[in-house]
Image (cartoon, rainbow, N blue to C red):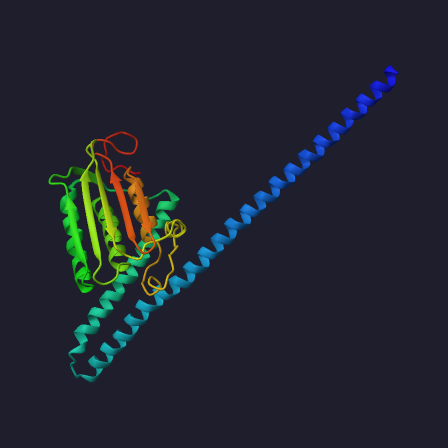
Length: 290
């Protein structure tokens, strides 16, 4: 009788062991399948982003190149004929504009490549933030006027001196203002707000009354080479690098970068800059490599 109970107990243990082993194999298999599905989704997303980037970049490069070639050939024809034309200066301006556009595209690609490889360097210097804001609004003003938009600047009376890479923070500001102008319809409104933070840093926000984005579109727009496609935005030039570069440059300065948006109700993008006395590691900024 005792031997029979012992045998039953052994069988139960054996069955439990088999069950545990089977369950473990099943869980392991499910985890492997989930990992494979996740990897496939990431691979498909990367492939889609790459394909869209190549298609978009083809258009971005061909358009200014065609302009440069076409207008150059026309000027050559005028020069060969010996007949001056009032169009010569106009076409030369088109060539210069197309060349600048190509340069900007190449610069963006080089910037994001350096940032992702960790070789990007900042050249910090002390600079007045309000002066930088004024310079950017002057540059964007013609495009704002062209679309009959209103650009309003609300800044604290005294903004701190910042230890920043002036050219790069200017790049961030111009990108945000350009996007606001680009994706806001005629007659819309753009507001730039700059405030001093309690610790001596600064927060800058650019808000617009444009088309806005969903959370998914924001995530995609923050992916290098990702462009939010819509019936309104499809006709606008761009590599899809502006926002990722702006965010990366802000973070290299030790700041934060955030986007709040809602379809049909506009977008607000704001970034922070730490006080001049402290960099990303808490030490004083001296133009060191980040």
